[in-house]
Length: 172
Image (tube, rainbow, N blue to C red; front, side, top):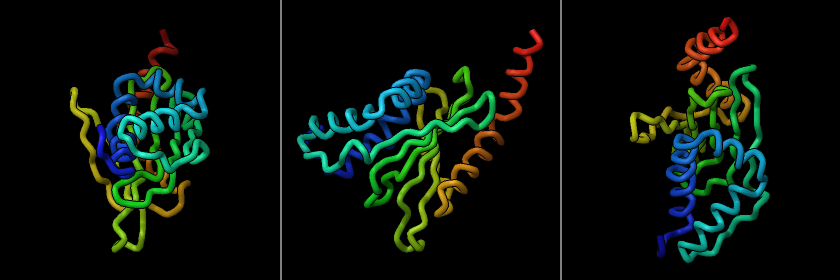
């Protein structure tokens, strides 16, 4: 991991380590990141240490906020330090149902400067054992609009299955 730049460390953290952890153990990911306010900073700080690069960030530049989408669906909105270069992330939205059967990791990335500095939406999707990044195009400048767009995508993909699964549980 040595001889990495600041951007390479952050790229590895945002686009490899976190989505992998989220998909491999979503319950632990949600528990640790939501209960330990400095967990993300401590992890990235260790990555910088291992890379032999001075960490330019402070703990307060990382944050996690839980948002309840419905009684069966939640999202962790993960905030990162200001993304200086593409494709570093401004934030990630980690969606999950209460049993962690349906999960999705969306990213809000720094866009190309030629596109009026609009952020770019992406998603890390798991297909079997493989994680794949899919670019979804330009995103709104408004964080609330981006959250609604991701809610629509998540519920559009899994809403019927979630409704069926939880309705069946209630009837049993």
